[in-house]
Amino acid sequence: GMKEYKCDVCSREFTLSANLKRHMLIHTSVRPFQCHVCFKTFVQKQTLKTHMIVHLPVKPFKCK
Image 1 (tube, rainbow, N blue to C red):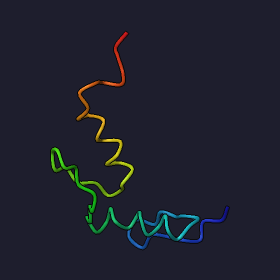
Image 2: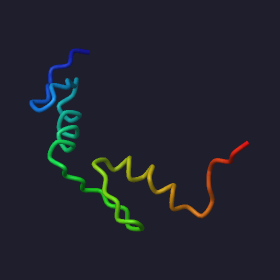
Image 3: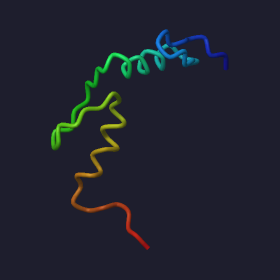
Image 4: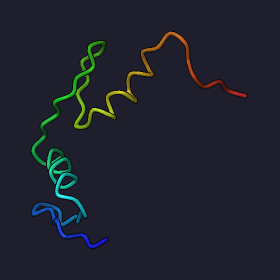
């Protein structure tokens, strides 16, 4: 679709206003999602969820 929403800082374009709003967090350095184990912070909730795998006692991937 048409990318109607443009970032004023880096000129990246988005099709949805919600995506632009989320993107703007990288320029404001707002990182509202924090790991309760190592206290690392993240812009997006999904990135935090993915990060949490590193703290699991069982590793989901194995070397062959």
